[in-house]
Length: 257
Image (cartoon, rainbow, N blue to C red; front, side):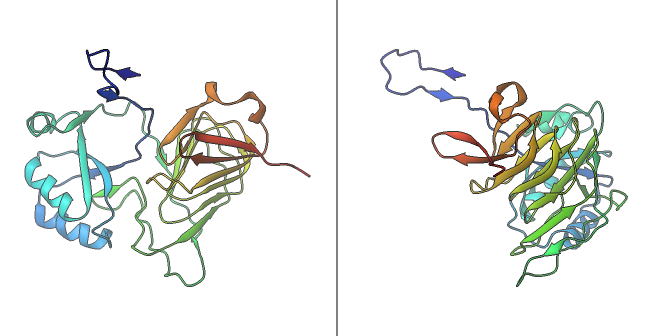
């Protein structure tokens, strides 16, 4: 959709809206103690320049202005809050307000350790969902890491697998209602019917390789396509998806020969 300037002779529209998808983390807070939060960030984050967009979801009242400053100091970019206890402060600070989830999606923490590519550091361990606040919905990779994660189990409806810092390889299927997200390339060797996201932090060289392609949503570097808009000829085929500047998503059938 395009909203144009009232001057019909204008060379370019005043505003353009594009169908881009932003991948962000939800930051759950269970304390307003800034010192405790600072200490937890020191344990959880190894890179103050990660530039990860986050949504604040707090179960207690916060000094939101001070909290925003703290997040920025740790390389996190607060873009809004979940509606509720912080809503009034968020409006005053002109932060976005997001609706609470109707149904939570289960974050999968793989039990199998990532395979580390040659000449890279050992992958940082991912905290379980029961770790004291703050908790991140996304795994955070240390600066300079490049790890490949192999996941052998089926992703079922309501489950989410999110890998930051390298390729994500799924040897099984992705059911409808599940999602697989990585900031690098995504490989699915089973049937993919859920949400497939590669290049989640903007890597335009990321690609998706799928053995049986039939997702509800596919996205590379923030450009996405829904199931109804996928080319018919790629459905249930072995497919490669990549982003091409000026063209958007390009779908290529991988020959079986």
